[in-house]
Image 1 (cartoon, rainbow, N blue to C red):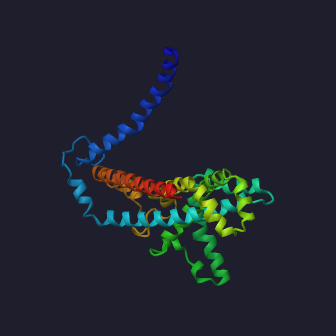
Image 2 (cartoon, rainbow, N blue to C red):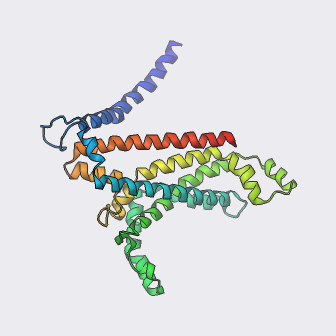
Length: 288
């Protein structure tokens, strides 16, 4: 028994130490610096208490970043889950080359987010505009990434296109756990496809729906790479997410302590939203 415990310790202690050094310790340091006026370089700084936190709630740039991020996250989460569920239902049906299409739909997930973003940046700037001009479609004739009103739509398109892949795989895994005998019994009872979906399919994949909703919301709230590759927060600050604001202000704008306070608030917000999502969706699973 002692030999077995020793093996467990050698497996867990290094992981715990690495987690503490690379995640917990930096988080504690970030909270410490959020109580100061450190600019990110130099050796002198002073404690200012919760002054940075108070100023955050009076900063219009911070408010705009939170508004854009929440709007973006809600739209991406809903669109990603609806489309990925529809695709998963199609890929789970008895169609030709089913495994081939499953592999194709998973490809976006293994591509780098930055690379995908730069490719779509080129498409929006050059390819789609030329198509729009040749086809006489006014809405495609201009680069939407250069519009303050439409730039966020371009970011949403890219995020949804890449996010669908992972969610589709999870939904497929859930669909394959449903016994075929349930569908056979529903057919004998004369149930239609729509009734079959709401009475059998969706209730049985509810746990996978919960996972996908929580992960999609979390990833959307933390959006950064797509912003850097597509708009860099512009035009102006129209598409500046919270992560992008923390990065640019903290590492480029000399606001390290101020943005550290922002990151603490940001962490709390994401944690609260994730917990509320889990409780609400898991309660819904139990009701079903």
